[in-house]
Length: 188
Image (cartoon, rainbow, N blue to C red; front, top):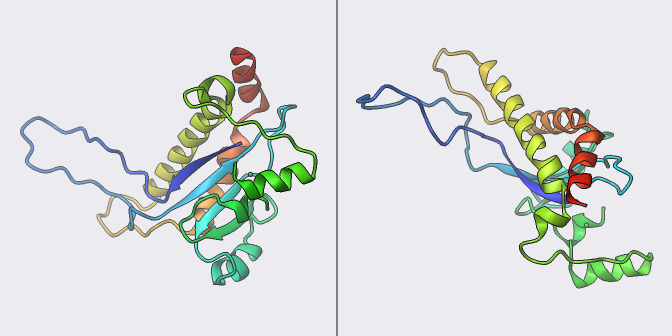
């Protein structure tokens, strides 16, 4: 299991233009600081678990209680809100290390092992084998969404939470079990 940020705007950090050009126009969607967090997990047998998206908002607020439960993707995603759009103790158990999470896991017979610093790529292949292709696919879907607005120079809106949910479902479904297994086997 691992979390990865989901910015609502994925504009490139670099441009390509002829030398000497005084300005470069960049089209991007609005509100570049809006983001969510995706929590992705793969079981030991290689089966993918339902991804979780954590949006910014109050856990018992309007978004969490009225919008997310009726989302067309609610049966394919675990959806919740947290004030900073982070994974925390409360939404983890709807999973990282804290005394309350450890106590809950101990109570159901799960043994938690911490990954030593600097060893993530060795013992947590989801970082390399799942997150990289997942993020690449999210970026591709964002660009396809941006291209849909054409080149008329008008304002592009911030993607909706529903747009982000669609991208996560599509990206997660595009990652095959073999992708994860090949990374696990390469590391073990």
